[in-house]
Length: 210
Image (cartoon, rainbow, N blue to C red; front, side):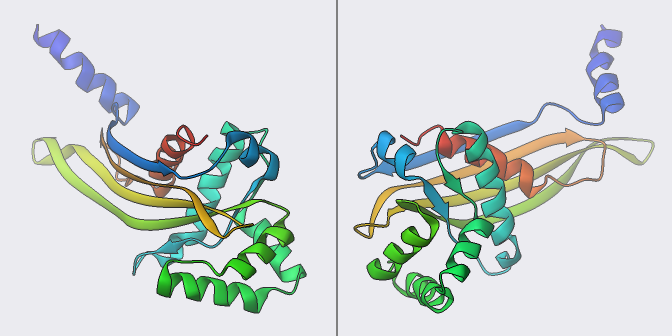
């Protein structure tokens, strides 16, 4: 019995990690977003927002989410953040875009006229606005021997908000929030990466899109 009890520990130590534990919840509200409309008109990602201290993660959040969406919905036209910014720059909309984002931060509403210009420049009918509300990482010792740390629990907590706006009428078509706690026992020093948490959150969101 002792030998069999030791097998999972030995295997875990050899592999360097164990099976992750994920606890997540997703809430969403479908206002008016026909599946065929989203697929036909496409979706462009604009600059995400983030809580204070996480601003440097905004581009990474948009990039990771777009990568998952393109894999999960290959038939849908998806314009990444860099592609959207290039299109806006080429269309001479840099100042308008700045006003669009400033207005959103102050009111939570996008200017309808400017939003329509964004849609025309990116050739899409919808824009996606991501908001990184929480991202934290943690570590806790779980098992040690002879004064040495052998197993640690690495964790990450993520809360992500997504809104999809119709560029024609300037209204919210779909919105949702994903909260996830990811934990894994490991013998390595590596923390749970934003990429790991974001990809799981993106899959959860995309599975609920029309």
